[in-house]
Length: 451
Image (cartoon, rainbow, N blue to C red; front, side, top):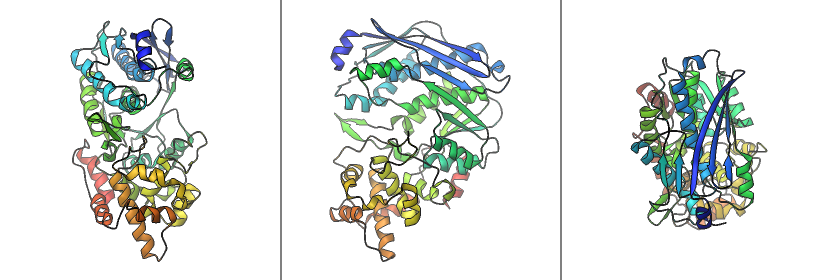
């Protein structure tokens, strides 16, 4: 099915209602979305093991406001099936600022989805209308505790190790945990855990199988709203994500518009969300601990934390089997970034084999580093820092008297990188992005680690 046909059949997507019910120490949330005449979704979320008495400290209006907003954050995942031209919010009221904010999130955060589905989404592609109750009560969290979202990759490990160990009142936030996220938390020895289960309505998967529209959504924006909600309920004053400055690089440009797989991890989104949350949600501080750094710097920091080498996973393909597939852009990007800083035995132990000896990965490497190609829609390093990492690896191998492995040799021969990138690598490794939201104490922790 194409977007035009679906939009004609389903002119309205309606956020109808939400509900929340305490349940044996958990909080069960449910949402109702409809696309008349024949589509209805009821996704669910469970906040688990809430401390006794914590919910009693949250006024009902504040709780309703959080649940309402979490429903708003769910909309992209379900609206995408039909791309209805009108999004009608009946579960609550949005003011003009909020309408503009959510419009921007959908336009920017769904850019990859539009690109992949061949949709030309102009400024009039959809409108947001709202009616119903106004939720205006914000949460006020006292004290000083930091909540660290953990996915399972090297960036989460670096934040856990550097920030979690410096903050005795740190806790981890995990949504639908995977073995890697559990291992990282155990290694970091952070016992306080906020666990959430998100249950996608199977009817969405059924529509996908039947040819309704599908594709990437700004998932990190959902995590921003969910973690703010959880921080307020579980009693955390700060949320320290592990998004870095490399996420600001777009994957491609279409019609003058930047399309970025990682839009909801960017500095721009972080700034927007901080402003929105301060106005409508709580006094909880949301920031990205690694924002001042490039992925290359994070890889170097991670290389000094061997306790995490066998525990972390970043491969989306191998997530279900808790493994590295060794054939995707995410695996190759992670391998390239780490190679200059790990011994050969260490990196082969992590990935099970030497990816630099796999010449079949050359086309993926081209996509990762060439400016004239679309960068893979994955959370990968920037083109410049990947070329810089290749140059560092080539120099390291040469200084050890070793010949270049086939993939690196071919990349050098075809000028995907050259020796001049070593100097650029040095600049990247000593760089600091002042465009961040770290407080003075948190900034000191990160700067000390870089020395």
